Amino acid sequence: MFVEPSPNKNKSPERKGQIEVICGSMFSGKTEELIRRLTRARIARLKVEIFKPSLDKRYHEENVVSHNENSIRSTPVNFAGDILLLAGDCEVVGIDEAQFFDLDLADVVQKLANQGKRVILAGLDMDFEGKPFEPMPQLMAIAEYVTKVHAICMKCGDLAAFSFRLSTSKDKVMLGEKESYEARCRKCYLEDKK
Image 1 (cartoon, one colour):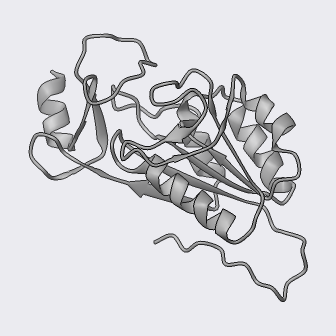
Image 2: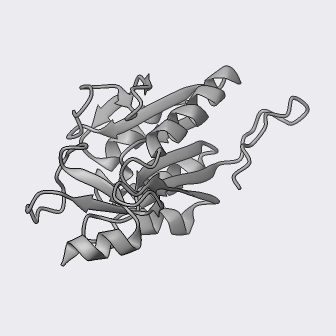
């Protein structure tokens, strides 16, 4: 169970950096949890900056938007390195759809945490083929906290950890929603993958 760091008024203003990863399948609530943590950081009067890959324009050009239509302002970026330049003096960095960033993201996140920033990332841990979705494995390995969230299988109602692609496209990156993907448990995923 993840326990959010609590601000302690008696401590010195110097902050310890840390990395938190929220992962799971499509429709598991990753972005919802990211928005919740970032909103709480803002309530604590921390300076928050949020980033998403510029290629993700499914719901909004700039905002990070969950499937439940909760949203938070963000800055779209093309490369992970751009986050280092734009994070500035913020205390908390949020990154959505981490799997769509280049492999430099792990180094960028390490640098941010080493600067004393709390870095919270959300992303798919597996692609539509059920394989680890880079750079998520590296991010989970270097994180202090990893939260795996689950969806509900759209075929049988069990817990789902897989993103089943409904189309025949073999492209690794294919943006889509309920028309393109379903959350599946392992059994239902394997039955229809054949």
